[in-house]
Amino acid sequence: MAFQLKFEKKETENKTIRFPVPLINEIEKVLEGTEITFSRFVIQACEYALQDLSTTEKLNKQEKETTIKNK
Image 1 (cartoon, rainbow, N blue to C red):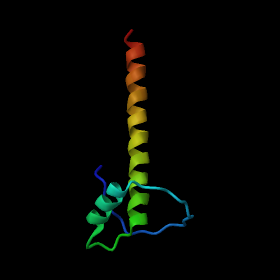
Image 2 (image 1 turned 60 degrees about the horizontal axis):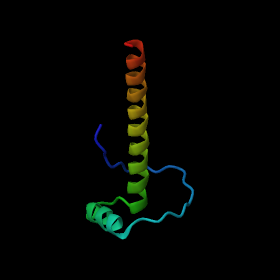
Image 3 (image 1 turned 45 degrees about the vertical axis):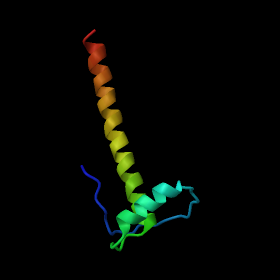
Image 4 (image 1 turned 60 degrees about the vertical axis):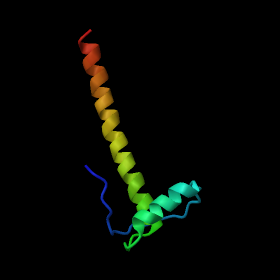
């Protein structure tokens, strides 16, 4: 599934995080002309990464199990 920006709000907590300046500039450029905040973008990008990571881990586990069975 491709990354898509959403306009929903959830309960939040403040965290301090440092970003490389070029990454900040690139994100802000993408957000120009939208009503999406920097924070909302970062949250959605993290959720997408976690979902993708979970899918990748499942595929890797299945691949390892198949390799073991075929030996």
